[in-house]
Image (cartoon, rainbow, N blue to C red; front, side, top):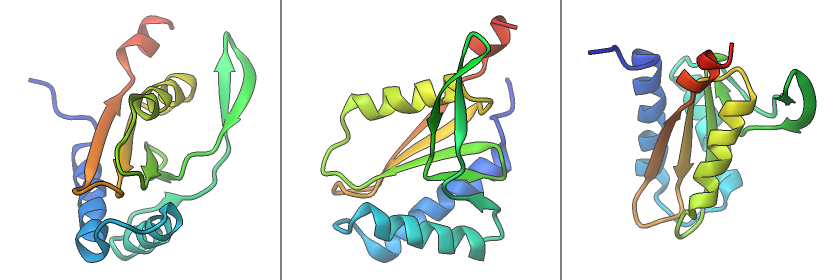
Length: 131
């Protein structure tokens, strides 16, 4: 059985999501959760980048720019939401962001529902098949 991708880092990252949700609960704007996550990532000693501009490539050409909410340790993309229900289009967006960048692991996190909703997505096999 394969070791999960970035096992320790992923575990710590998800722990930050729960720490923030347990402290704040649902009901705030996305910007509140973003600031709280940034603070908690810092407190946990995780290097996070906000507002990093990522080039989206198509057949070797830059065709757009994507700005994720966070990139953790230059390995994990984080997208946060604060909506009552998360539509499937958000998950598709994360998948395509991973597909169009160098990153393999991403989390889509919704703080707006009755409970914390964390979606984990990996994009690796297809990228390696195209090389």
